Length: 296
Ligand code: PEP
Ligand code: MN
Image 1 (cartoon, helix red, strand yellow):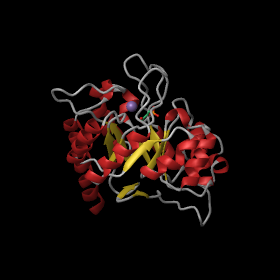
Image 2 (cartoon, helix red, strand yellow):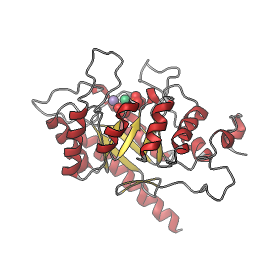
Image 3 (cartoon, protein in one colour):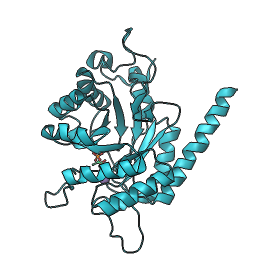
Image 4 (cartoon, protein in one colour):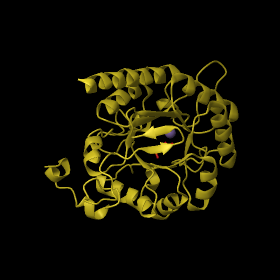
C-alpha cells in the first residue's frame, strides 16, 4: 500500500494525471523525470546545488556571490530581481536591471540562472533572461501565472505554498504540465505549522519528499534557507534533506568581508561560501558512497 493510501490522501492520479507516477499510460514515464537546465540535470544520480543571494541588490554583490558559489561547487545561480516582500515599503528588487546583472553573472561563471517571476505580464521578459523560472511560495496557486509559465516552455521551479497540501501543490504543477510543459522541479521550502516562528521561520517538511516520490515522477528539491530562516540550521537541514532523498538544494549565500553591507533581504538565513562548500562536500561523499553501494 502506498504512503498516500495509508493516510487517505485524495485521488491524485485523477487530479493530476499528467504528472502522476501512478497513472497507467504509455505516454507517462514511470521513472523520475530528468529535468535539464542547460548542463544541469535535476532527478539524475547526483543532487543539484543551486546557490546565490536572496535578492540581486547590486552588480558588485551579485558578481561576488556568483563567483564564490561557483568556487564552492554550486551548479546553478539563484537571485531575485523581483522580490515578494511583506511590506511594500521594503526593497522590492532591482527589476529589469537585476535581470541584466544576473545575465552578466551567468555569462562570467557559466552558471545557469533561476529567478522568480511574480506577474503574468513579466513572464516573457523574465524568460528571456532566466534559464529556469521560479514560482514563489506566495504564488503557488496563482493559476494564470502557472499557465503563462507553462506556455513559456522554460523549466519551472515550483515552490510549495507555505500552507499547501501535497494535493494542492501537485494540482499547481498540473496547471503547468497542462500547457505542454513537463520541465517542472518541485521545491519544499518549509510550511507554516506549529511551532513555526518560535525558533525557526518555518517547519521543514522532509516527510513530503518520499510521499511526493510515490505520487509523481517530477524531481523535488529543498530550500533549507527559507525552511529554517536561521543560518546555523542550514547545513544540517541540507544534509537531512539529501538523506531523505532530495534531488537538490536551493540555498541563500552572502559574502561577508570588510566593507560589505549585510544583505537587505533575509540576512539571518544567508550562509557563507565556506558552509556551502561543506554541503557540497557532503553531497560528493554521499554520492560516491551510493555508487559503491550500487556496485554490490
Ligand atoms: C525566494 O526563494 O526568493 C523566496 C522568496 O522564497 P519563497 O517563495 O519560498 O518564500
Ligand atoms: Mn530569501
